[in-house]
Amino acid sequence: MLLRPRKIVLSIMAAGLLAGFAIICVAQESTNQDPEGMRRTVKQLRSENELLRGRVLELEKRLEGQSVRDRLVQEEQRVENLLAQLVAVGEKEAGLQSRSEEISEQLRSENIDQLPISGSLRPEEVREATRRRLTSEQDRLRSQLDLLQQSRARLQSSLAVTEMLVQSLRAKLQTVLRP
Image (cartoon, rainbow, N blue to C red; front, side, top):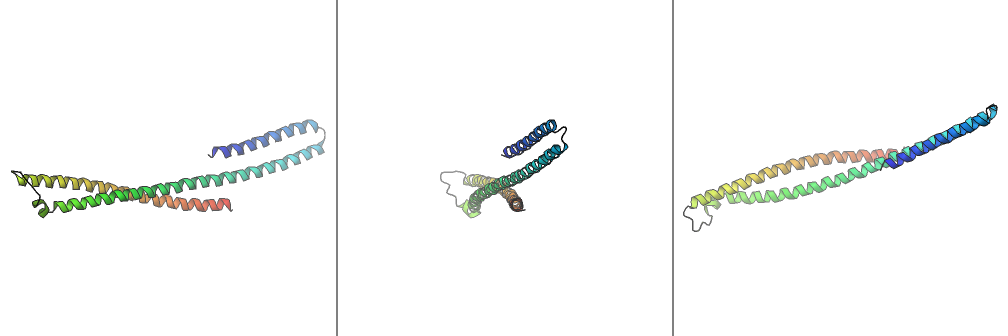
């Protein structure tokens, strides 16, 4: 994206140099014996050179503005992406937290004791197996919640840094557009 304007600037500079070189060659041939004609040619070349420098500066300024604008758009899209990721993490976290609370309720001793155990000759073993299964699931949910909390913290940190970068780029764009 940045390559094209740079090529334009380089093309203009090259064209200016070639034109200047051609004029110098022609001027040298025609004014080898005319110092006044040579002065006019040098003056003309200087004015053309200044004109080309002005155009190059203008193109560089446009290029810098476009570059800052492109980076700003990219960072704003990153902010949107980070916000979407934060929402997704929050939704997952809420679902896991809800399930964890359900398991905590099921693990209460009065709920384990009231489990419907029909046809079992060893109800205590069934209750203990249910307790182990629920405890294992709750541990797994806790580890997933911890990972999601770490992920949320990283996302929030990245979001804060990216938002500061967006503000910085907006300020830079203002100074580039209005010096």
